[in-house]
Image 1 (cartoon, rainbow, N blue to C red):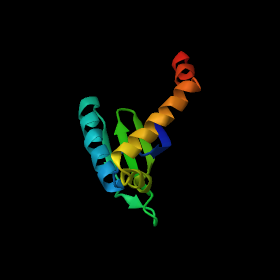
Image 2: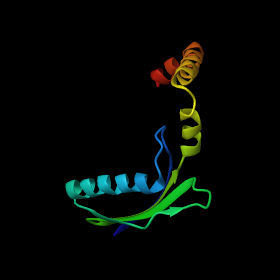
Image 3: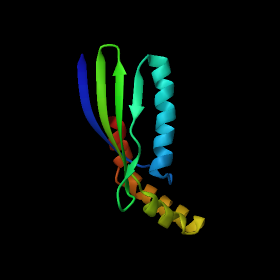
Image 4: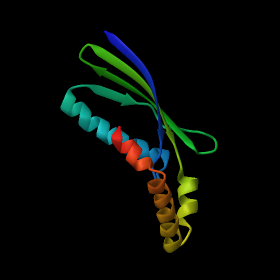
Length: 115
C-alpha cells in the first residue's frame, strides 16, 4: 500500500473565520469528495494555538491501494481583518484603490499574466 505523509499550511483569506468554522467547512467538502471519489477520511479534533492564530487538525485518508496522513494548519488572520474592517468603508476603498494603482504601475499584474 502506498502511504503519503504531507503537511498543509493555509493562510486564511480575507474572510474572518474561526479554526472550528473553517475545519467544519473543510470536513463537509471532504465528505462530498469522498463520496464522489471512493475514499474515506477521518479528522482529528481541532487544536488551536494558545494565541488563537493557528488551528490544526490531522486528516487520515484511505483509498483503494493508498493511504495519506495530512497535518493541516490554518493560519487565522482575523485580528488583521477585523482591524481593517473597523475602518470606514470609504477609507478602505481608497486604500485598496491606491494599492491597485501601485500594482498596475509596477507592471506586477502584467508580469504575472505572461507566466
